[in-house]
Amino acid sequence: MNLKETEDGVVVEFFVKPNSKSFKITIDDGEIVVFCTEQPVKGKVNKELLKEFSKLFHAKIEFVSGLTSKQKRLLITGVAKSEVEQLLCAE
Image 1 (cartoon, rainbow, N blue to C red):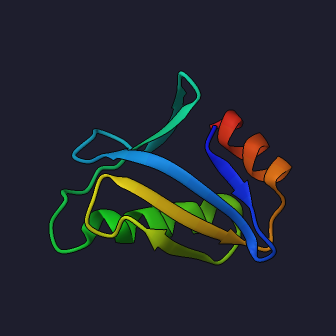
Image 2 (cartoon, rainbow, N blue to C red):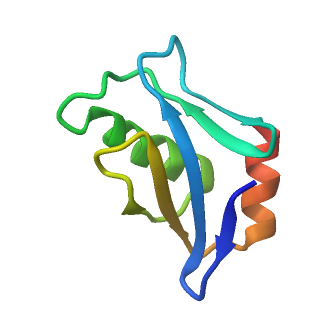
């Protein structure tokens, strides 16, 4: 799993697959893959990611990189790496 703990929180790196039937997070060969229901048009996928990750972690979420690519990095503030691992594995 590609997680990096910082003083602000945890940076999660993952790959996005848009236009899926449902929103879900999977771990495939140690890589995080996020299936989004939205189309990759006008930031719809990015908005869905912020909404769903905020709901999952009950924390402030912001983009570190990947606003226009399928490879994304999000900062989840105020959480420990172990919490993120636990919640992602439970999904």
